[in-house]
Amino acid sequence: MRIRVSALYITLIALVAVAAFAAPVDGKWKADYQSPDGQARTTTFTFKADGEKLTGTAASAMGEVQIQDGKVSGDAISFSVMRNFGGNDVKINYKGKVAGDEIKLTVSIAEMDTTFDITAKRLP
Image (cartoon, rainbow, N blue to C red; front, side, top):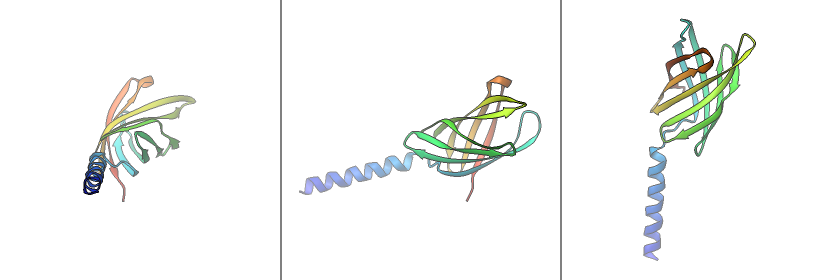
């Protein structure tokens, strides 16, 4: 009996340790940045992680869109959104790392041959 209880405690401690090392991404994050065209922009992300699946939205002056292809692996996240520019749907890819209350993201837009970095900060 004592061995079973000890094994249970060890298992619980291991599960808590694994959860502690996974970067918490759930919630709202705001990125204020300058886009490659020189414009000041703000995007607010709302994330929900379920295992390695990441869902949520990205909201900006252009409206709110669902994130697609979202993935979480430890402190790494990746996802994409579709935006409409002048009647053309454009896929925007995001890839980054969560570090405490910041996410450093690299944004790439293949159709526009553009890549730039932004930082999103957790909202209270």
